Length: 177
Image (cartoon, rainbow, N blue to C red; front, side, top):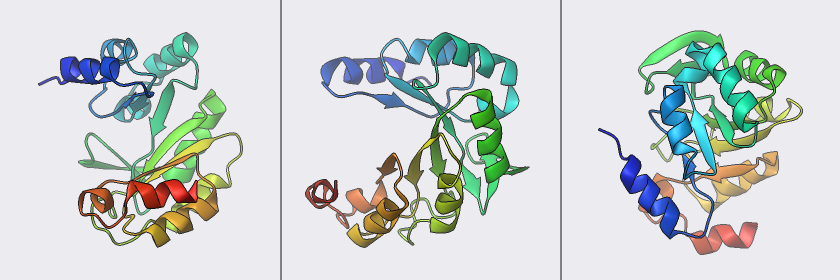
């Protein structure tokens, strides 16, 4: 089912920008999400329907559209992480940059939720590509991990399990920025 009404309610009740991700697999859903979210994260659709993706880019611009480049050891995964493609992470990012995209969310799915540390190798390789902002996700387990990722100079970092399990506090992270 859709959580759109809950998301819309949350977005209207907070005074911070809201980014929506997960299950946004057609133009209509993405357009609906952009009625209340400042940015949306597009994964599977970006790889399966370049025509629709191009239309969205023309209509909304590259700052509202974040391309999700979820990967397993450098190979792109789609469809809720159920399907591993033969497309390399670096080739995918380069292709989307050439299309005009600049915002990316990279989740190392073999690290996500494991607290085993971030996949610095792939983050460094992505970050060498010019004209993009990368949000790093997956495996961060400590303030030391946040520092390691910060050295790569990403646009942002997503903390999940590390926050839930009190391995990292918001106060600690704020001191780093």
